[in-house]
Length: 327
Ligand code: SAM
Ligand code: DTB
Ligand code: SF4
Image (tube, rainbow, N blue to C red; front, side):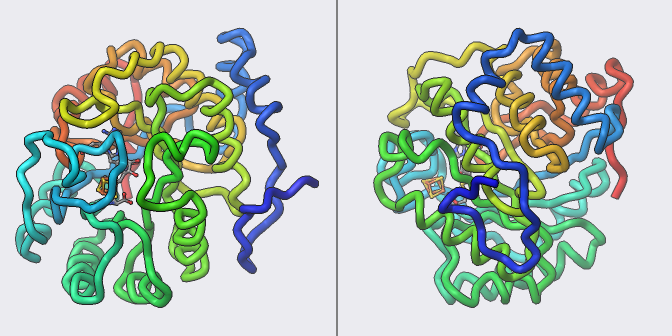
């Protein structure tokens, strides 16, 4: 069995099937019906095909980020009109989580525009995690790179998931981010896994990468051992002022293929149809579910950009005869 150099080294790790970039590229190149058939077959072996998990995002600290991620409206380097907002107060977070739970979300994900949490930032976030957990929701945080010991403290506070994306393939990464290395991302993922926190890790497509580079991203994700429990696949949300604004949009069917390839290569992971849904037709979203997506972000806002509101998602799921996962 081929193991990639970046395979996570953790005692709970079980050997995963190995996928080379070429093998994944070959999946991308299958006739569309064949690829969807394979993805459906894998999906149905592990999940009910009519169920969707709902996660809700909240930006707990917005804008003014020192990093230079070319897609991100929250980088201090780009003029995007995003209003900077210091860390929210605990009660604001609890109120948002309560509302999210009432709306049917089972997981609440707190995002901060940091390179990584400073020591003085972590304590208030731990309180937020404790409070959201106490509401009976799954907790998730995405705070940037973690330093040794920080993941353990998040786990002890009750953090169920940590989101940290690889974003793209290692050979395209340098075009997108210069302020941190790919290896830094893998290191944070090791710390999360090492603390026993579930890993939420995916990427963004539609950033001008090639199909081979999309295959490279999926290969890297599928080489994580064990696979991430959640795999968010984001379609770039183009925000004016960011360097990637004006990039040629990805063919929606190529987005569906990316979802299908993620499903085939990571059979037991929750694959999330993530950012970019506002720009997608209902029919494309339905194809994503057919391709094995079984999770979405719900509610009218992601972190700083828009997302379909709960009413339109309820209507879409009803039209498709699909149901939200409860707890
Ligand atoms: N600052 C932390 C970090 O970068 O790890 C956490 C928040 S950051 C906004 C979380 C993720 O959101 C990024 O890794 C990226 O994958 C995704 N993201 C940010 N801007 C996006 C955009 N315009 N379109 C799609 N996904 C985006
Ligand atoms: C993920 O993969 N996508 C989410 C979440 N993890 C943190 C973020 C999407 C952000 C889209 C742009 C914005 O709203 O600022
Ligand atoms: Fe900062 Fe995260 Fe945005 Fe990068 S993706 S600029 S680290 S908030």
